Image 1 (cartoon, rainbow, N blue to C red):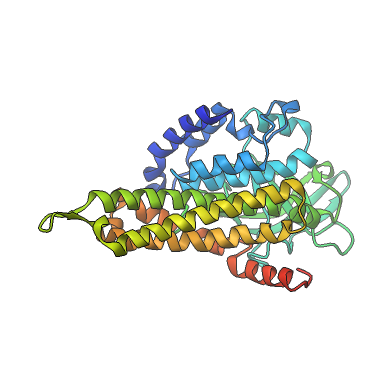
Image 2: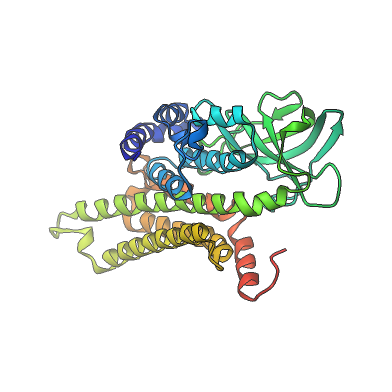
Length: 369
């Protein structure tokens, strides 16, 4: 349905990927291409002008983009996650703006004090007549300088529940983006801390009920986030396999008249890369199927898909560096970039180690929290 638009966007993303990585610049041209193609409105309802697609289609788009640029894929991942929340709880004018490609949104959950345990909000929301005043120190917000809005978490205004969610426009007085991202990988994703100091928003900007944030996080955000970050990993792995196989088949030992791929050890490494990539994609597809049919093992699959994909992407890209040797260290080969980008999933909340703990609890029949 949208494959032609997606391939057109992928060509733009590919052309800009190396420069985005080199300069750590936000991929503005890539987002413009996504907006004009209608793909920023992919998961918005048709009733507000979107394409009305779901998680499976979102994962397909994110994976395809990740094959060209991990930074752009992560931005789109966060946009779709936040859009999924706004589709259920946001105002119609915001939903229409997203559907038309005129509004980029993102999540603002992680805080300096709770770090990757994003479900534990520490920031506050204080009632002030028809408004609330937000105070918080968010540690990593993708598209921090460039998103038009944030789906923001805080402690509830009343009660003992874990969190409440809010729609927060980027230009809200009292918000401050602190610094620029200059990281190892995903260098163009504009992930930066945001400080809120008595940032006043209308109380009507609340998303869901007061104290209902944790339920939305677990019921909406976590499935979308885990599946889409796994899709980012899968896309990076596809690129690593493709570029490694091309190098192995096309690079020769001139004195021996043979290619690197003629070595059984090299072929075995490439085979391992292909298997890990296909396993990751199969698990992600099964996770999407479980979510769609509300299978009893849905939460287990949601937890597994990100953990498995992150570990597999790290292994596959490590093998890519090993097979391609010194050539992989050169920027123009494009392998060291996916190696760096693939590391992000391991430490992005919920981190792989936290997910292992949750998976172990689920398998042993213990409560997750």
